[in-house]
Amino acid sequence: MRWSEARKIYPNKWLLLEAIEAYSEKGKRIVEDFSIINVHAQGKDALKEYAEKHRKNKNREMYVYNTKNKELLIEERNWIGVRT
Image (cartoon, rainbow, N blue to C red; front, side, top):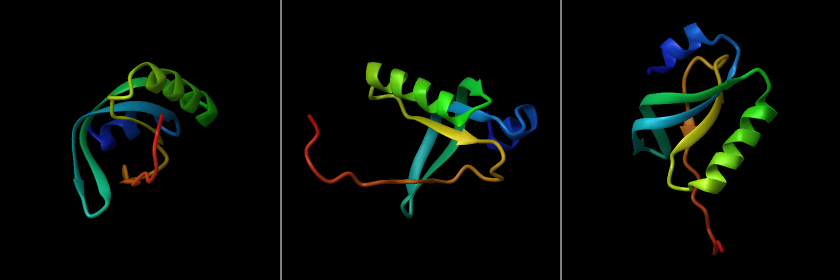
C-alpha cells in the first residue's frame, strides 16, 4: 500500500505498519510499500501493540504513524552503545 492510499482509507488514525519495500537515503527511511498490521484511534494503543510485536520479533521493520501527516517521513536513528 502507498501512503496516499492509507490516508484516504484511514483518515486521522494511527497505523501500525510493516515495511515491504524500503531503503535509506540521506538519513531518512523511504518506505515505498507497506502493509497495515492494525489501525488505532489512539497513539498509545498503537505504540503498545508495536512494543508487543517488536518484543516477539525484532527483525520486523514496523512503524507507528498518524495519517494526518501528508507524507510518511521516517528519520533514521543511529543507536550508540551496547544492547543486551
